[in-house]
Structures are given as structure tokens and as C-alpha cells.
Length: 118
Image (cartoon, rainbow, N blue to C red; front, side, top):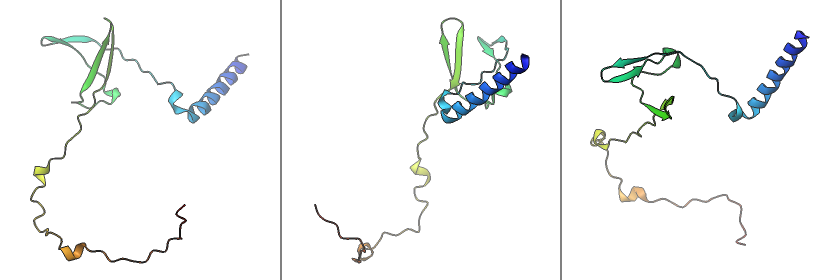
């Protein structure tokens, strides 16, 4: 009987993998649990996050408090970097304006099939 159960469970896992492969947004998220301790740091309280999470030091996070005892963390949206024109202004000193005669294009024959205007 236990062989039938394990075979049945393995078959279900294969079927689920096939379904989730075709629609990946339905795949359940793998959840990991870590036991951490809250400690005092200056006038605040803090929690050390395990290195297994893969967070880089200095990453800005958004903390959400749902009620009194449920918290969630997620990376905060990064501010879009702006292009600093002052860094490149004057770096291309050898450029010269295009002469007017270099701006004129000659007509060339095009080998397009004729189209009906209708």
C-alpha cells in the first residue's frame, strides 16, 4: 500500500511540474523560515538577516507592518539615475558642424513594386 501512495505522490508531482512549466505564474513560491532574535541597537530595535537570503549590504528595503505582529520586507524601488550632461560636455572637442552641401541627398531609384492608390 505504501508503494502505491509514493508512486501516486510522485505522479502528482510530475503532473504539477508539467502544469507549472506551461503557466509559471501559478507556481507556488518556495518559502523558507529562519529563526532570528530582536535586539536593541541604540534607541532602536534590530533584527539580523541571514546571509542565505543573498541581500547585499546597503540595500534599501521597504518594511510593511500589517497589524501588530506581521511584518514583510521587500527591496525598495531604486531611484532612476539621471544622465549628467556636465560630465560629457566639452569631451568631444574635435567635432565640427556639418556643411550645408553635405546635408543634401541625391535621389536614387527604388525597386518597390507599384501600389494601387485604392
